[in-house]
Length: 292
Image (cartoon, rainbow, N blue to C red; front, side, top):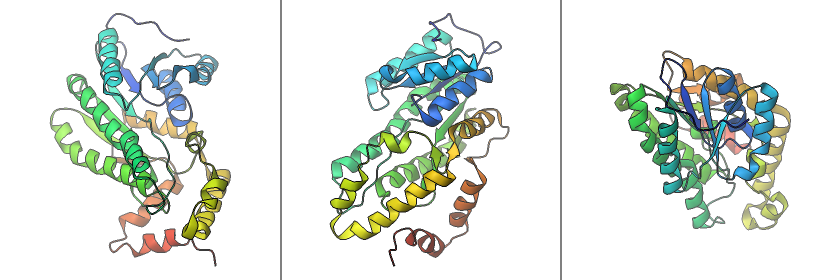
């Protein structure tokens, strides 16, 4: 059941973690897993009418969550959430930036406002919430984790805006890491591959309409969507497995800056790490849009 606000706790008793985007998928699984691991878990989502699935999962696991409203793109909502958590629990020991939104499209046919919206939720909202949390993480010598993606390492066809946001998150956090460490805050990113969750469904993708409106890009988009469908159907990792990786990352000492969540993700990311001129990545991802 949802926990009521309580008096401030001491660090010796319970550690407090704030997780964004917990209505489904990785966020939902992580909220339940962190609570099961002994964390006081503040599970947030933009629309509290979608909290039923999270509450059912918490009840099934026998854990208690504090479920709160948070729209990560709304500065007032973010400020109220951070201050409310600190007022009720006395501290924030970890922030897990999980909320995000998929976006599929390509530059010529995309609306620039859609690209900006993708960057807003997947990058700027992450940075804004992290900024609000940092003074409290500094006080608790806490941990700042952001759920990125293998798309934060390898640019993928028809994912220009989404990968740009994830590249930006990883560059920002990689740059922040040594600075934050100097004041006692540990920073890291978690990189899943395909995950069996509602993430793609929540993007509201009408694949038939997308292909119909793709113009010159009809054939490569069709090939890409066929690949994505196959990837998610046959190789998707369970959200609970990703959550287990996240719980381990909260306790890891030392914490690597990048943590992949599966062998497949590690192998995929390794393609980029050793690809000095970019040819290996282009050879790999080019095959995803070839039709002949």
